[in-house]
Length: 494
Image (cartoon, rainbow, N blue to C red; front, side, top):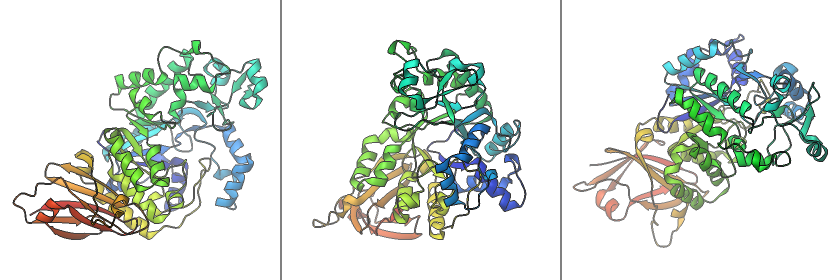
């Protein structure tokens, strides 16, 4: 399933099933989900569905999720009266890359893929390269596939390690900037046996899905892995090739259209794309939209340019806070317009389209009901409808300069602007990314020779504006936007 500039929708598999069970009044597995639920996503314009957390979860990780003090406090706050049945355990402590028994049978997954594909939807699933569940069978049968502690490392950092049933000290999965993930075991990326086993897993995954979202993918880079575990590994231990080069090459040799998407931070996205990833997280754009002034946002779009088409743009996901909470309502909608209309993968999260405000720990298998914001529902409906135009998928994208509308007004600096053009079709996007009214003039790339009027239909507001063609040609199209307001203008000349 390959389309240009796709729209991706993330679903938490466990909480989704819980919600569907409540809606239809019976227990359901993934193949039981009525077709209309999937068709609704296709009708909204989504091309890819990421079913987060479909793999077999660890019983030990679940028990740890039930007993963890901090998590219990979160459960109590979010869902008073919760029971152990409501806790699924972390989806990132994978016990086995087979469909979790709560979600269905092994043979259900290829059938689900076939169903989604028939509706024009591709299936994205997780691949968690850095670690596996603490009780994964390999910890006993293949301990060499994991990081084993040295006497010095264990003495210096006892909190990094655990002792398995055979008395071998293995490392917990770890990101160097956070405490270890104590429900996981750290894989050894320098082990050729581990690499082969993971490539075999990926080939099996590629049989039943259209792509993988690779968790914390940069941790699998040779130099990053060596740096994180420098107390154990020396430079001379590094393999001659990168794991990702080997893995992606092997999978794409058999499944050339299979999608590799990387969760990546620390400015390493360019490196991962160079190793074969189709898409990489665009955390920088998220940070610009959340924290920076509009000039910085527009500069980023100008600077990245061509690279944007291979990035994943988002304003919320299962790791980040809800957009309405972190951005505020109006700003979140302006930011959503931005991520939906730049090149690349446009990533939306369950509940985002309804204005959910509560972030749910991934360990929860059921989530509380949340109020739906009708204004947000209406806005996203209009935004997604506008973006269904083929111009936003197959056209050419170009950032545009917004000039001052008058010498004494520099509010144009708060306006983001770019356009999409495909043949004689032109869509112009302008976003007032600030909390005051802004004005500007824009020269759209359209031929106005022998034309009298420029007609702009705003697909978000449903309003039509007309401007003299001579004025637009000489001075630019005049725009005036309220705080956080956006226009998606379909522009023609007559």
